[in-house]
Image 1 (spheres, rainbow, N blue to C red):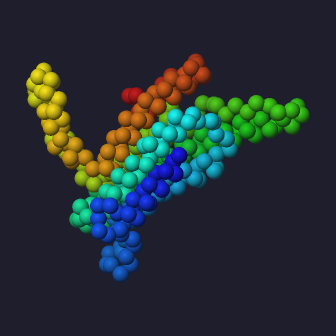
Image 2: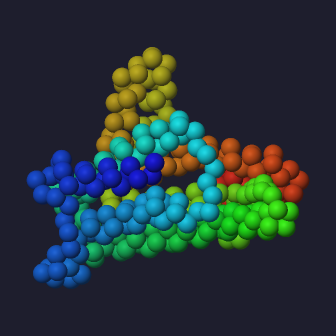
Image 3: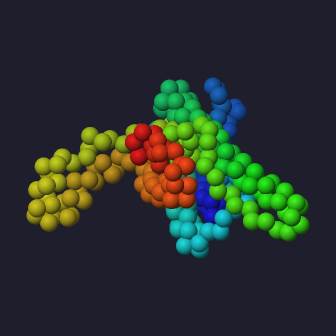
Length: 269
């Protein structure tokens, strides 16, 4: 289901619907580094999904079954996400922005560094979970050899190491760091100063003027580019999953689960 995001991205980049030219590829005849910022960002995006959609599942010794609704929901999210990000990176306005705020911009490289740190953390904490499953399977096979019959192979255990000392889902927050860094490198930060004031919203709400309320938010919405949309949507969709998963850990392991851990944000949530 994760493959649909890079596939949608690559098809959109090939079609480049909002630009007369395709996604810039490395141009070694140019001065400086000779690589266009959109190509660097595309590489980061594809590296993430290469790991998420292919490498990680192939390295996993076992997988729990997923409900069809989960798969369908993931596809419904991934297809438009891949489209929006590729359409953004191939647009003329993005090319102009990244020309001025790309290879020589500290913010661009700060974003790349944050993405790299988040990606490394994501892989590291995923590896901890994979090791739990590997040990469970090895233990099950040992019992099978000892008893001469199949033994159940539960792969649930309390993870330890890294950010697991403070939260239950460090791979989630590491992924947020990835996409925050990506958005920081790829586009201007949304202008939160454009958010409407409480007074204006209160007046519109009392008068049930919903059209006016939408118009009040329009300037801010127009300042939010697709990379930031993706970042915000990632947080809003993953926080409830983390809270439910954190509750499941407590229900399954009860008193043995570390009470000082939070769900996904250290010391807060």
